[in-house]
Image (cartoon, rainbow, N blue to C red):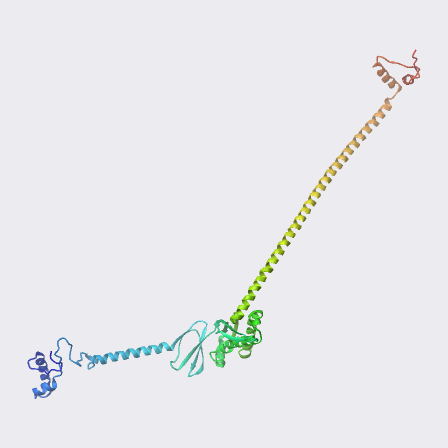
Length: 393
């Protein structure tokens, strides 16, 4: 294979075509005075005689505004343009910022706090000049880092996951940031929480912190923070609540507390059993008393019923007796009246003739009559009735 820089020969077809083009150009530019040797040596560029190896070196195929540029230069230009476009777009996006509902934005220009306080929405700032700070107005829960404190008796314990809920008032935000910077919650609240917890631990023993006065820690911290806020920032920053979980104590002390808790639980179980047994006995006594009272009440009710029944019977008997007495009295009155009336009637009828007549009727009913003389009762009665002495002879 011939070399890439092989000199042209007169027998090459490509040499002949290129030679004719150069000759015409040289002829037009030099008043037809040309030298074939000069053309062959100076005007003919290197031509690649390799088959299928592409166009000649530094050969440009662009026209119009890009005429005279090769491929490498154009690619470099496009890359630089795209890079500039991306950088510009990134700058624009960095200058735009969004504020969500419940937040406001404050701006520092060249490190100085500006007076602008922006509301929720999309806003624009000067790139590389202005710095934006977001502040949340609505209640926010912050979980503090673990706090290590030492009790009065020298025991170190750790409070973890302490939660603090705070909020800001919009009209005081700029004033608070101007006085305490945008890190105002750390300065006014979170650092004061740590300070209050450490102070409480320093004034109490581990038993008081962990058990007997644990519920007092939250109240103490809340009161301390409120007092500090009233002193440094009475308006604009509100403390809603501080929550402190049980601290982590050394393992040996924790084991002792667990053992105490186990024994205390056992005591509670024993006390509960005693109370249960006492309640059971009291229940049985109450049940017996109630049963006795119930029997007494039942017997009393039965006695009352019996008394009522006897009284009812007595009343019935009395009423019957009264009715009978009244009836008999009425009968007696009637009989007495009848007898009295009959007596009065008999008095009128009781004449000598009537008596004699009735005696005669009575005697006529007897077939036999025996007289013992005039001295007898019957003889005397007949003698008296008939007005004479009856002679038996």
